[in-house]
Length: 220
Ligand code: SAH
Ligand code: CA
Image (cartoon, rainbow, N blue to C red; front, side):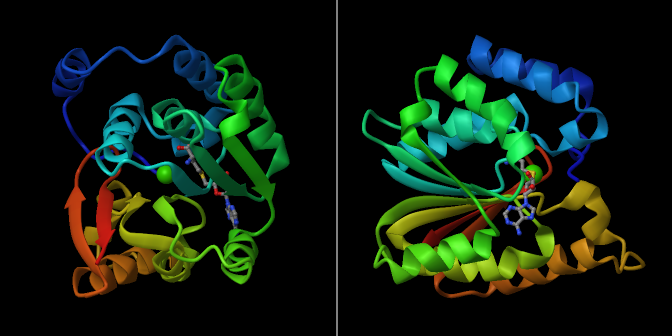
């Protein structure tokens, strides 16, 4: 589900004081997401979203894909960082969750940057490839069902331009990747994804322990 890896609360608070405050509209969306109970743990935190916003700015992204929207917090953070005319193709299977986000996307005035597609993400990604959109995206955020991560990475490779960036969430899986006895489908898939990406010469890859672990891979 995504529990943040252990950084002391004290250090987290210090870090939160060292970055801009969370925009009010994201605070409100996070508050409504909390009301969903344990599922709310799937949402990325402001520390992570703020970092991703700078990745978007650093690579000059205009056209992005998000695989796994949930209540649209990461979607909104992305849309807020994209320039005017920027777009995010947001993929999820669950309309009731994405409906929560939609209200806030429009409140924030970025609703028209977000193209939400409700369907299994693999079908949507293959649809974009079949539509001739390969090589045209600047960033792909992978944050949906973990067993499909490696397939999403392959589709992302096709859809990204050279220099485009894959950001993958939950790569440390609350440190469960270290527990060799954990052979659950999600943990095994994340371990395999990390191992393959380390030596995947299609990308320049790095990893940071923000949130539940983020891998950043730049298409060569
Ligand atoms: N990025 C979001 C969290 C996403 S949680 C945030 O930071 O707030 C994972 C999401 O993946 C869920 O909303 C779930 O509905 C979606 N999902 C699961 N399987 C999927 C699939 N096969 N295709 C598309 N979305 C999927
Ligand atoms: Ca996640």
